[in-house]
Image (cartoon, rainbow, N blue to C red):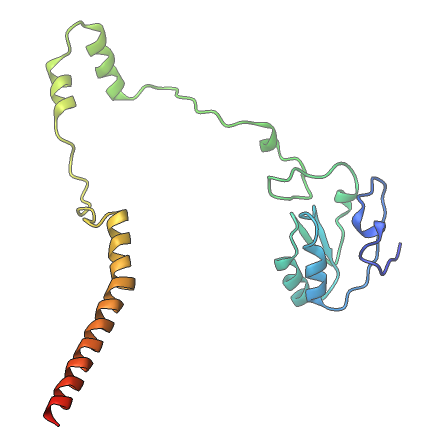
Length: 185
């Protein structure tokens, strides 16, 4: 179907049956503005030379962009999931149907010491010494002395107070200089 009006129901309404609406545009920027009026598109099919298609694909909000073709696999079945990379084959990756869960097959060596200390009654001397020993140096240099709010105060002084003091100092200097000139006359 062809429409020239941007307020036409053909342009603004969502259809459930297959329909192709053709709408003229006056420039590439007009096409981008027109595409940005609605929600993010499921797919953008761009029929143009590669440079033009690249420009449009950068600024038209779409989950996937196809240049100079419509993949036949997209014409059959429901839309691909939105929060995963778009792919035509296979459209539904097996990873979409799994949830990663951590699984620990072997216990670390430190947990054996802890288990022995907890089950033997009073804590073992070695475990106690290890738990109260100071941490190893990590090789990082000391942190900054200036904190978040201190930095804000310093910025305020530099931006607001310093120019006022410099301006008053300059006015005072010029005033004294003018006063001395008047006295000498």
